[in-house]
Length: 227
Image (cartoon, rainbow, N blue to C red; front, side):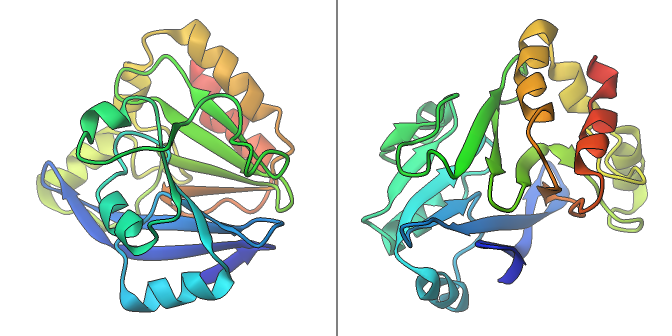
């Protein structure tokens, strides 16, 4: 893990393959004011990662922010059975082998209210992604709605598809497939207005280079096509 901001760490894991494309993985770890630990989009759990997480404090929450990032939830729950497993809308139906303690909504869980805000981005047919805002560090957490891959990450026909999907833009961008999946634009507008009004200073995404300058300006550029 690498410390990204006050009380916030990032950990990059291995790749996962989806429809023949290898995606890098990244999770965020937030230490709450009471000493508990909030895990966002957990990656593969290794012994070394577990030791680092345990050194921060007791894991209280394991959070899957959309229906696409769920592969390692079972391992994390088995390692930290006292933690609450919390998923995005639709995930309990997709992962009926797991028992979820709560479903993410537009209201923060009482355990992190006042420290982490959240907003489900509505109107998308692929997934309802819940975006988080860590107040003390000014960091917004996106999962898949913003992505960026370096030149050379994909090769052959995959590189062409990734380029057409806007996954290899100069700065992180909303992939074309997610743009097309926003079929309820009024709902999406209402959701994103909340996110755009957060006093963001940094942006972290599961697949892409974090944004550490002009975060609010960047977000408005990234979603200008929708408005």
